[in-house]
Image 1 (spheres, rainbow, N blue to C red):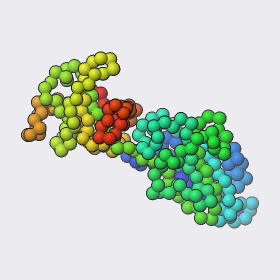
Image 2: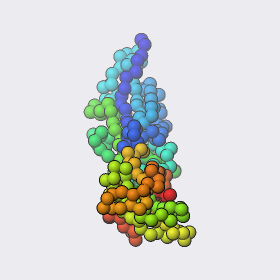
Image 3: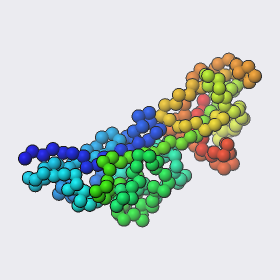
Image 4: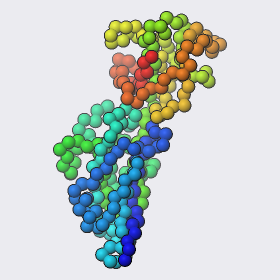
Length: 274
């Protein structure tokens, strides 16, 4: 008898920071115990960008095989998760400032399901890796544990969320500091940044800063079109454009500006230095 394969379950990894909504930087590897189960049951692991699926043979030991046959054995499948993006925490919200010795634990275990499409990963999904039942000598990004039962859905979703942060432009170029009446505003002229505020850089150089009036959702590609203007008049909402398209913040350069500098109750900003 020829054997085809059908899905046992699939886990999708999502992140609303990305235009695609797909978190592509994770790599999942089965534990040794899981590899043995995969071999014994002739299962197949299929990896795609942002997802992992396990498939079962429709024919096993020369007999017809069904999904329920596999589920009835209540197999425990476990995977180590590694993240290939060192800047992941920079564009991910709902996490503590420090994740030292912390790893994510995602599991479907006897109906304890935190892999739902509507759920967002939160701080409660982090545990101390040293206290976990599975011994890790080095901290992984996370661990996925799925205990099969007859109620397990075909699809699971692990969804991360990006923060909304204040944008702070820092004008340090001497030729720009010579202009009068500097302002930062979007091209539709309905979002005017607060400032300029005088600032002394760590090297002692003077600078000016402008801060967004509200927190801005952090995205891989922002739709904001911002410009730097001089001789700006607030009443007429007009001025002369110096830089028509200001750069957007880079997720690799997030800073924490500390309790002594509080912006609308937020302590986390994205700095863009010009």
